Amino acid sequence: MKHRLITLMSCTMFMAVYACADASFEGATAAATKSKGKKGSSTDVKGPQDPITPDEDESDNVLRLRYGKGVTPKVADYLFVMDNSVSMGDDMANVSAGLSGIPKERFPASAKLAVMTTMAAKDPTANPLSTLGSNLPVAQADIDRYTCIDKEPGFLDLVNADAVLNFTSCQGPGRAAYSTPLCEDKWFAPYAVNSGGQRCFTAAFQNPRHGVGCEPGLLALKQLFQRHVGKPLFRDNAAVNVIFVSDEMDGCKSAAAKNEGISATTMAQQLKDAAFTNSKIASFKVHGIIPANVPVGNLGYQPVIQNLGGYSVTITSSGANYSGLIEQVVDDKVEITSSEFALPIESKGIIRIEIDGVATKDFTFVDGSRTVKVNGLDPSKPVDVAIRYKE
Image (cartoon, rainbow, N blue to C red; front, side):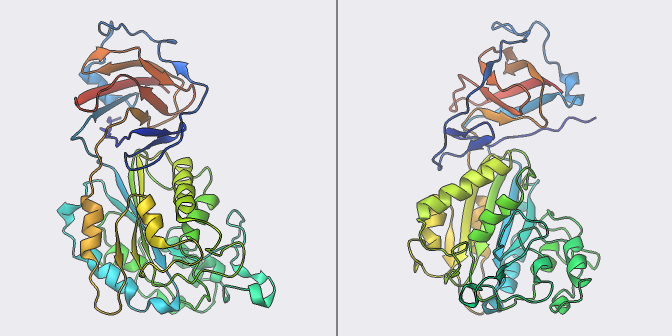
């Protein structure tokens, strides 16, 4: 099986044993229960007795990567979180047009896109999902429900062809919104097309835009993570960028969904923690195409985004072009300056780690996990790292 060359983004602090964040984040401390790399290792500090040879590139048991300043990630996931309320008007089309204006070569070669919408659930972990609204007093029924709304594509999930098929077969209103075929995959390349030759992201931005009655906003992103506990949303070691698009900040009345009573710093921390708990990613940033910063309660979208190291632009009415903001997100580079790495699969142990061909015993590893921390690396001195591990 061909070895996959994986370049990782790292950071200056560590999020438990999941992965690491970039230097713009405030991180948690490393988890306990770590075993030293010398346990079961055949390495020699002066060099490998049994070197990791080039022919082992054919093995899935060797992870090779480049570490240090000037090294940028090759795996990038871009999730668009789209306000799907009736007031969005042409905003979805404007975002799609802005994305279309970015040259293919501007994206990282491995870039993937996905789309979800903003709508809150009574219980995001329930299956089937149900929106806020039913079984609540009239004054608390924030979301104006309609038949099959719980199956609407993008509702705490990523939009794709299966989601649309499930929705349209439900015989509820809103089916006519999906006149363009959707792509099969939830994650697709920026210039991937559907069966009719249209861009996958253009098709994914289709939506009934029902008058839901409230603006759950970033709560939907948090609930997405709650729903997908144990089911990673992003690729290993990916630089994750969320682009949140909304024209209002009214919030929802129901205590489960309102934007009051929580600070921007707390919301940012909750989103970041949820992202790193869900997936073994390298970094997490949230950007916004959002209204002017008029906070609801203690929460405003702009400070949340600032706390997550992102960029934002004010959403406008007709004729807006958001290529500039999207290009800024795509061009953002975060160097690999930390030394905590995620293996492609869970491992029964580390056989050997080499730095520029010289073996080292100075690493820590959690048996049965996928996270290795190599100690003693200097980010100002780029090196090649090779990690041989047991399946």
